[in-house]
Length: 570
Image (tube, rainbow, N blue to C red):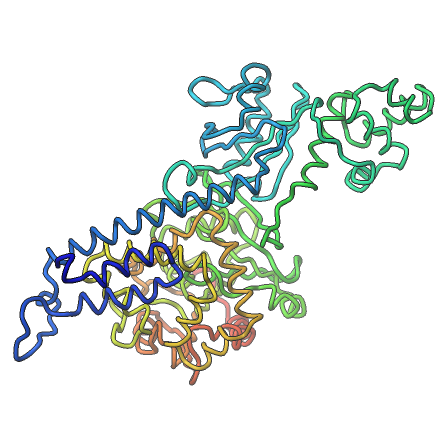
């Protein structure tokens, strides 16, 4: 491949780096290019992949693609940096710190450099933080590890009258220091210059009108006598109101009270717009990782575990929440490592998730619950059932992905077929195009799903064309990619290799439903998987495809829960 012979393709590569929403068109072009035989035309064209573009030609293509991806990543880094700085109000008059997962200071504003050169919280020359209050340090560590969730939080030091306003940050997939930022921390003290209004203080702390007026002035002028004078009340009355307010806010001093009031008020004022509405629960695993989950339906109902699709975006369980309550079901959606705020783990395999699921069951004090897994959740559930027969009492898999030996490449939809062709030609092509694709999906998700729908069955097109279901999909996708979207590439790569378990070891009742018109995992592939599962009850559905879940989920769960339970001995 020479630059002069392939100017059009090279130009498209760099144009896509600037406009990542067009990445699907580039996948199409590169796949077609790699399928063209090298050398002069002959009477017949071999279909053997080794007769196509030479390794040297592919290497030149990869070099151009790598440069384009790095250029795109650089722009991505600038965009994310601007977004984070704007979101975190870099011009506020408080010390601001950008911290990595080890609590190191990646960046800080000028106020922080001046104010934290000494005192109870200090930035050391090696850019680490030194705390005089060990409890405050441990609390911040919990926030950074996401053990305390992803919400804005306020940490107070009883010892030093210092408050830390902590805002966990959505991980950037861009290179450089911006990808290392885990938490933005504002350091607040009683001397803060911005004063919350009496109305805000009253609504936040549920104090009386008189107490909120006094607390407002204490935040503003810092002097009880002067505040009493401005309110035209006696100092005795002011002291009485102060003691009452301190009791309600559990503060031991006026300085602590003001610091706490400033911080909590700022939490309300600085709360960022979030896609997140449901509560994400967390558990710290024995190895220190965080595992998270969501719950839907009846909190006191029958526990049912569930895993969602590859990409962790479907279904939106709020769609079924009323039905769950009606049926007395407590749906527990487990978030896989790398998604949501479940800690990413390098070289994680499908079979490794069984220990995490078991730890969650023990934490929730539930024994052998049913598991209902959809799409990319299927491999994790099947491997868990095969390696630990007592983890579930029954298992249902819906539109599950399948082991690589059952993939039917010729029956895949066009986009996924092209990606697998690129992977088999050279895994680097797959990874590089995946990185561009992720940025494209994040920038223009509607455009991506519109293109994907074109090669799917009519039922799938109807789902992706439904504004409500599409908005739910995009909402869940953005929520699940809080730690960045690169986990998607990891999972796609994981599907290209054997699962390293014997599904014949499964001893519990299993139902397996699949759409006959699924153009991502063919019905033949699904039957191949079903043939490996002892005693499986397999059902296929005419006209249904990859997104059949919204049409059949309630019936699927009903059938699963009516199965005869597995005995303790399997």
